[in-house]
Image 1 (spheres, one colour):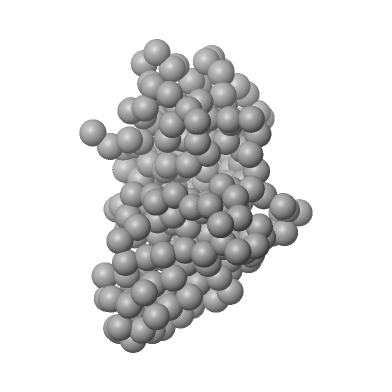
Image 2 (cartoon, chains in turn red, blue):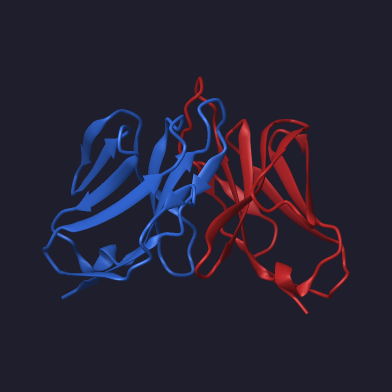
Length: 115
Length: 112
């Protein structure tokens, strides 16, 4: 069974704090994704990584950065947390198949509240 | 125009009916199309994927893809109350990337 594990289910942080969200997958997937999900806005892509140390910006990268030093781990960093970053954060991974997407497996999500 | 568009719903159907969910996308280079189901408070899980024009059936689910018209749909036959969830359409953004973009989802309610 593919497993994508996010380090925290719930997190409460203060405005201005630096926040790290960790995601680990155990299936040797090349691709990893960070999304945030907000009511009425759906899943929005923050960052995408297709290999170690490789990353691409998604639709809403402002205020976020990412790190992928090892294939199995993809970290999302909120440089200085703000209240508008209160959201559900979902990590996903998939493997690459010659130009075609394959199924993305999701972690359980981290509900982040910034106060 | 949004890259992946879905009607937010709710779509209400009686138990046993066919539920039809639709999705349009803007990038003609997209090659991979997915339907995910998300129950309230849970993570999305894959229902079906389709890569080629036409229909693909899996049990009570049928995915339909029309690349010329840039739409993909999901039919759920013999709808059950347990099918009540939000259904997310996902598309790869460009032909040479695995970047996966989601629509906002359609909420389906199946009533007994």
